[in-house]
Image 1: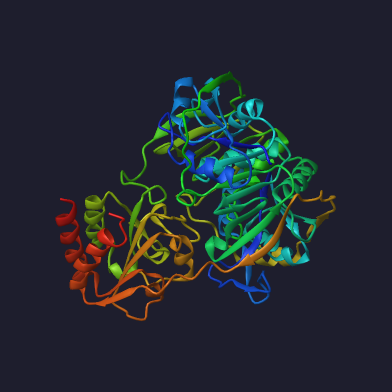
Image 2: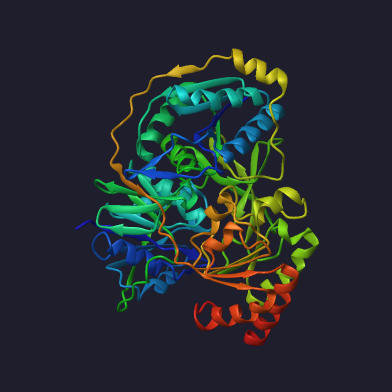
Length: 245
Length: 308
């Protein structure tokens, strides 16, 4: 019965506008949510538990404000919720070191996470964590089955491949061919009462530090035409002016 | 100067030309890099011969037959000098970058679009903002394609180093994609439809143009969420794929922030929408205010005449 950990991260709602003030992103007016790909990771972890038994623990790193997404995971059906209490910017090295310690403390045999967090879009955490633990890893999985050991479907060359994955392993999840379950009333009630286990882990120094944020350069105004007949002229410009055909 | 190393991009058993962009990126930080070519047959490394590399190493191993993140990181770590490593930013290369960095206890910076010494800029929040970081010491950096002008130089001979890595995963079965069409993430031209297409059946008109141009067909999240026939693999946007093709044609797409985040870095953007106030027009190089029924046949005929 595997001990399953799913990593979740709090990020700005993907529909939110991102503002930059004083050379830094300003998230004060932005709604924070669980990163969308983490929802697929939670779903896959719960499917794994249903097939094999065991327990699912949702794990995040952050301040008390991150307890909300842990409660959201609890409402969907995870068994335990754990937060490593640490705030401030960390580079990938510092974050993965902390996660590796936490995953070891939790005694996990398999870790699921989103293919990338919606804020950085980096996708470094899953493979980096696996390397630190000396585990196998597969990234961008779009499906998993648990009947005969863990096997996952992930992109490979021009198509996909079904891969046999020996445990322990870290699997990062893309949107798969399945619906993610939503919390029901019982789950929401349980989540309200659930308490977050707090772990304290020393955060190593970062060698990469953020110096500034900026908005992407604005595009110069384009040309606008009225009516479908203008499409012929646009096609010409794509060849002669833009040189992209 | 910082010692730099480039891990060559490999596609269909050959060095991908974008490797020359990685050499240029490395030179924006330090010396001419050592290019390491993961291969099963050392002759593949000749493909990196004229990119201006300081040295070329053909890293030869049976571990490079199929991609296994742990095995590739182990086999490359064994032959790569110490220093800052550069990889491409395809999903596989970003995965490898993260494992290589962790193996050496280094930080990884993904999706670099500008490098100036130890200062590296990459998009965050799916391109809604740019983040510049300062790097103190060696790191691993993945570099977006189509950003750095490719480096070139005289012929450099490759030296061959045998290496090994412990392959953990095994392929049970290769599966064809659900769609035989070009993937939006890989295409140089993308034509996408939104809910303004009215029905998933009307995507055949986009496919016809895509066939003429050698383009991929994409979709907005609204289209994917509304119509089951439009798979998530086609979705361009923050919760779908981020694309930066030379040409992006948006048809019947209003331009939600979510969608813009996934395609705004395209070199040229054409928007076709019947609503003149659609936000997509603010990001388009060429906007056509018309229904798709009016515009697409004209556009298709023009493309066929030009390219036929």
